[in-house]
Image (tube, rainbow over all chains, first blue to last red):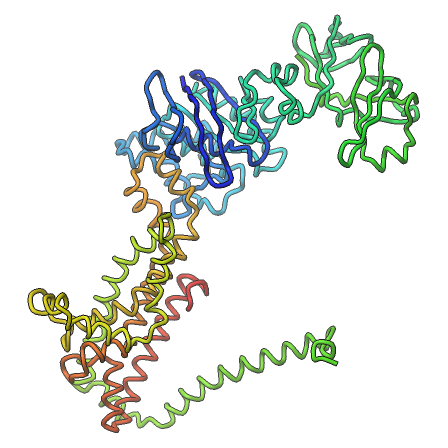
Amino acid sequence: MIEIKNLSLHLGNFFLRDINLTIDDREYFVILGPTGAGKTVLIECLAGLHRLRKGEIWRDGNNATALAPEEREIGYVPQDYALFPFLNVLGNITFGLREKKYPKTEIKEKAKSLAHLLGISHLLNRDVRALSGGEKQRIALARALATSPRILLLDEPLSSLDVSTSKYLRLELRRFHEELEITTIHVTHNLMEAEEMADRIGILNKGKLEQVGTSEEVFFYPKNETVSDFIGTPNILNCNHCNPLGHGLMEAHCGGVPIILPYEGDVVKRIALFPKDIYVSASKPPGPELNRFKGVVTEIKPYSSLIRFKVKVGENTLLTELPKDRFEDMGIKLGQEVFLILKLRRLRVY
Amino acid sequence: MSVFQVLKGVRGERVFRIATMGILAFLTLFFIIIVVAMVAYTDWATLISTLISEEILFAIKLSLITATVASIITIAIAIPVAYAISQAEFPGKNIVDTILDLPIVISPIALGAALLVFSNTPIGRGIENNIIRFVFEVPGIILAQFTVISALAVRLLKSTFDSIDPRYEQVGRTLGCSKLKVFFRVTLPLARDGLIASSILTWAKAMGEFGATVTLAGATTFKTETLPIAIFLSLASADVEKAVAVIFILIVIAAASLIALRKISGRSYQI
C-alpha cells in the first residue's frame, strides 16, 4: 500500500498542494487532470526524483520519503519513454538487471519472457531509434518491468501514439497489469483513457487532488464544480427499468426515454452522456428511429465559442451544445422543437 | 528610395543571394590563395629535408606529447566542471560561468604573462621550488596549453550536457543506478559524440597554442620548442623554408582534426 500524506511541493511553474492519497496493492490507479495540473510532478515524487520539503510517502507502513530512486523498487515509464539510444532493444530491457548484478542466465531468461509477454521478441536486436511509438512504449515498459518492481509509474504512456495503437495498448496495459499483479499509477489527461483503465481515478487540478473515486463516482457524483467542469458536465439519465434484447443489446427506459445500447451486464442503472455527444437537428433527420428523440428547447446559454442549450425530452432535460455559427444557421429558438440523436458509442453505462 | 524598397521581390532575393555568395567566395579564395602562394613558394627538397631535421622532429614530438597530456588533463577536469555548470543550480552560477569563459576572450599572451607573474608570488614560488617547475620548462607548456584550452573544453562539454534530457538519468536511477553510477552508465555514453568532438578540438587548439606557451615556457630550441614556436624561431632567424615546413605540418594536423570532427558529429561542434 502506498500512502501520500500532506504532500506539498513547489517546482518552477508546477506545484502540489497538500496531497493525501492511499493506493492499494495491485490497484490500477489513474491520476487524471489537465495539462499543467502537476500530474507528472506527483509521480516523480513517488519515484523519489524530488526532495520533499513538506509531506511524506509511506509504503507498506514504512516511511519511504527519504529513499533514493534506486531504493524504491519502482518501474518508471516517462512520457517520451527515454529509451537509451546508445543501447539496442535488448540492452535497454536488461539495463536494470545488469546494474543490479543479476546472474547472466537469469538476465537472459527474464528478457526472453518479458519480450514474449509484450510481443517484442522480434525486436530484441534492433536499434531503438528506428522503432515506432507503440514499439518504443512496449520496450520502455519491458525495461521498467524487468527488475520486478513493486510499483509501476506510467506518465502519459499513450499520449504520443496514434488513436488505434493507443486503443490497442490500453487493453494490453490492463492485461499486463492483471497478469503481473503490480500496483500501477498511470497519469493521463485523457478522460476516456482514465475511465477505461482505472480501478480508481484521482482528479488533479492546479496541484490539488480534487476527487478520488471509481470512474462511476467521478462521473455521476462530481465533488465540486472543478471536477464537473473537467469531466465536461455530462447528462446523467437515471433508468427505471431495462429489457435485454439479446445479441448484447439492452433497451433501457430512462425517464420515459427508451434507449437501445450495447450492454452485456444485467441492469442499466444510469447513463452518462456528454453534451458534445448529442447530435442536434432542427428538422426530422432521415434514417431509422433508433435512439432519436423529439424535444423542446428550454434554455439557451452562450459558452465560449459554443452555444449550450437545454432540451426537454420526456422527463429528462438534456444539455447539448453546438458551435455558435452552426447554432445560428439552424435558427434554433426557445420553445422550438428539435430532434436529438444520441451517439451510441459515447454512452457511458453503469 | 531606400535600398530595402528597391530590392524587393524575386529580384531582391537574387541580389541578396549573389551578395552573400560573393562574400563567401571572397573569404574562401582568400584562404586558398594564402595556401597556394605558400605551396608555390616552397622548395620541396628543402621542405622534406627540413621536416626530417632533428630540430623539427623534436618540435613535432614535443607538441604531440604536451598537447595530448594537456588535453587529457583538460577533459578530465572539464567533464565534472561542465556537468556541474549545466545541471546544478547554485548562487553565483552566472559569475562562475563568466569567470570560466574569460580565457576564451583574453589574449593568450596575457594569460601566459599572468601565469608568469603568478609564479613570482609567494604561492607560485612555493610551487616552483617544492612541487614542479613551470617557468621555462616543459610542464610550463602543458600549463599554458591547459589554461588556454580548458575554457573551450568546458564550453563545448556544457553544451553537450545541456542537450541531454534529464529524463535519461531519472530513468537510470529508477533502474537501480546511484547518482555516480548513472553519470558513468547513462550520461557519459549519451555525451560520447560531444566528448570526442571536444577532445579533438581542444587537442588541435593545444597543438597550435603559441602566445601563453612562449610567455611562460620560453622559446628554447630542443627544450621548449613546440611547432608554433618553431615557426616563430624560424621567422625570427629569416629561415622561411623551415617556417613553411612547420606551417604545412600544422595545416595537415588541423585538416585531419576537422575531418575527424565532421565524421563524428557533423557540423554541430565546429567553432
